[in-house]
Picture 1 (cartoon, rainbow, N blue to C red):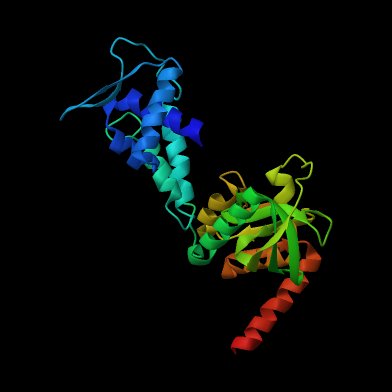
Picture 2 (cartoon, rainbow, N blue to C red):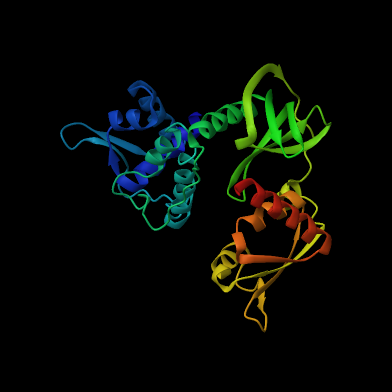
Length: 300
C-alpha cells in the first residue's frame, strides 16, 4: 500500500540520512518514477526533503528539520524482526525476508541481531509450508477450503470457513467454522491432506473470542497417578515443570495429572518403556497390562 511505502521511506531516511532513488525503488520493488512521486507527496505532507546530484548525491531530510525518530524504538523493531524471522522458518517463500530487508536498513539501529532465534519449522516443513501459504491466501480472500482430515475418531472430508492459523503446543492448526459440524473447530495441519481452495467466498461471521487454551484443549477427565524411575526425571521436568512430581520413600517420582483420553495417556506412558508404573486408575492398569501382553506376544 502507498501509505506503508511512505512510512517505510521515512523510516529509512531517519536511519540512513541520505539514500538514492534507485536504492528506494529496489527496496520497495517499484519504479523510480513511483519513488519520485512518493518524495513529492512526503514534501506536500510538510516534511521537507532535499535532493542532490553527483557522486554523493541522494535524498535526505532537510538539515535542521526535527522529526520524531521514535515511531518505533530499536527494541520494538528488534521484536518485530524476530517474529518475522520465525515466520520465514515455516513459510515456503521469502516474503518475510523481503519485509525484514525493508525494515532492517543496512548499518542502522534496526539491523537484526542474533540474540534471539525462533525456529517454527518442523520435520514436515516440505508439506507444511504449501498448506500454510494456501490457507493464508484463503483467509485473505475469504474463500472456503476443503480437505481430508485424519483424527483419532476416524477419517472425514471437511469444508470450513478459515479464520485463524494457530501455533500451539509445537504444532500448527487451522481454526475456522466447519460447515459439516455447524461449529467452530480446529484442525492440525499435519493431519490435513488434499487441501483445496474453493471458488465460493463466505461472509465473515461474528467470531467468538479466541482462547487458545479453551479451543485446543480437550476435557481432561482421567486422573493419572504414576511412579517413574529417577532416570526419567528430565522428561517430567521438560514436559511438566520442576514441581510436577513428589519423591517417594522408595526413591520413585510420583506424578499426578489429568488426561483427556485413554489413547493419549497410553501413548505417553509407553514412550517411557519400563521406566514407569501406572498406579491409578485401577481399571486402566488392567487395560495397560493387556497392551503389554499383546506386545510381548507379538515380539516373542
